[in-house]
Amino acid sequence: MMRIYIVEDDQKIRDILEDYLMKYNYEIETVKDFNEIQTEFQQFEPHLVLLDINLPRFDGFYWCRKIRTISNCPIIFISARDSGMDQVMAIENGADDYITKPFQLEVVLAKIKSILRRVYGEYRSDRQSAVIEVEGLHLDTSTFYLSYHDKNILLTKKECLLAQALLSQVEQIVSREFLLEKLWDDQDFVDDNTLSVNMTRLRKKLADLHITDAITTIRGAGYKLEKAWVN
Image 1 (cartoon, rainbow, N blue to C red):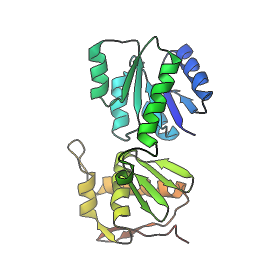
Image 2: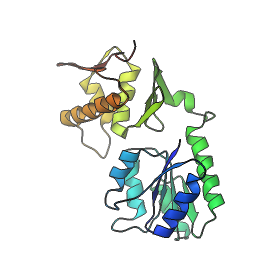
Image 3: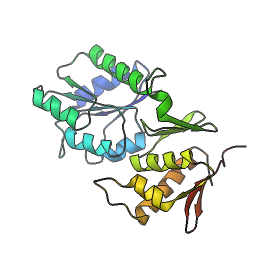
């Protein structure tokens, strides 16, 4: 069942969207704490986000950028602000689409279905190149989802980069230097502690898939992903 996270400060609109989308078998979570939107997103692991612009404290553009640092999950803005500049800012901050209020529920549903088909559907054009599969363990590098059997876990961007590096060289030692280079970008300073913290988080995500003791630390060299989940 596809999961949708609704971030809207108007309770009436929240309830309308939730009730309507649940009729189409979507699992819905609505925002509980407007100061913890990123945390709620990570806990719920949605397949899509409906996001308003005018929110308490920080606006939707801010939260869109925050989500984009950890996930490529599709984001649709729903806002009463109908200027062209607002729509441009939404796209530039990482949104996939923009719907103005008042809206027709049928249009919202159609856009949701279209984006979910494009991003997660079996006919997605880049699906084969984006997915790494090793002995039933799948990593989708375009959506940051790691899956095994019928369970899937949403990774952060850094966790996904580490998983990609290890799965691409399974049963081989991957050096710390190589992994540090994978994690580094223009915005974040990366050191050994950053690598260790994210490796610990990736181990926990694997454990959530009932895969334990798969990542081995090779002292003085790096890490190795072993096929511990293969019987």
